[in-house]
Length: 328
Image (cartoon, rainbow, N blue to C red; front, side, top):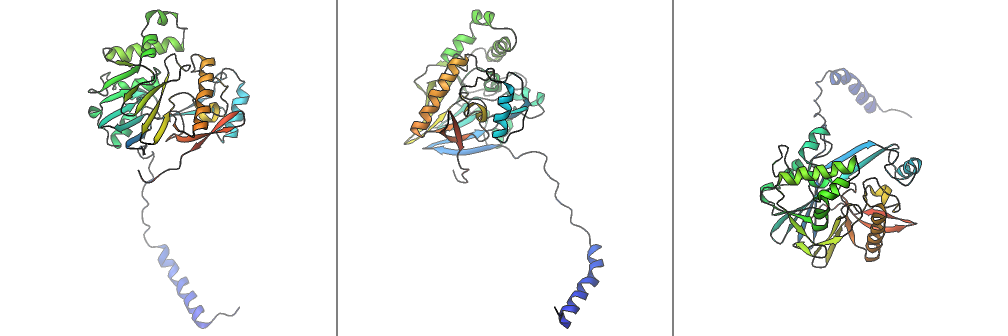
């Protein structure tokens, strides 16, 4: 290939300028952020605005009996199949804020401010993320609790054990309240985790002076929010159907824990299921219904933001995440 005189002169000029370019001051790059943006996601169910507010995610080593009825090697195989790391579990937490019928309703509250400090910010993020989403806790009309585990009720209190939602009515499942406030049931609770669950609930609800409104299954407990019995995970575990116009979403609470494990393998029993056989039967019944009705589901422990559909997949089920929507 022959270079023209013009090409040669242009190349020479570039080479001559190179030392000058190398001595030019570099523009400083913006520092990289060391944390995610506030995590909340909005969508609509008919006229109801839903805001999923992340409470964070907890990662911990995979215990031998995290799934109590299968070998740890099977759990690791399922994690690998889902492109997750072996020997560790990550569980996400996704409370909701509903703007419905002129009311602001929070569904479950996350692990609370004390957990934020203890976990170095991994969980207990609901207060900060909901504030970033524009939620004033004093403007919350009602808080609906699905069941009495700490990652759902501890956010009812601030770090100094004051009501986190001072003007809100606290709605709790009647069956759950009856069980966990029963001194006889507490005395019979197995040592270890279950005794701690009872003690934590007494701490939370005693700080609130037990000012709660028990609700029954099969009734609307907030505008468009129907309480549905899904017992097994706990004796009074509750899910919800959120409806407006022709739109519906099933809020499954803890029908499954991590869906990579427990939707794909509905016969597996997570250590947190208090009545394992009943929890499995509930899980299969709910997921068969979701498949048959092509009903969208919002999962508390699904990867954020937790909205999707369910399809049958062999002997189990697969969650098909909803597309992220830039519009509301």
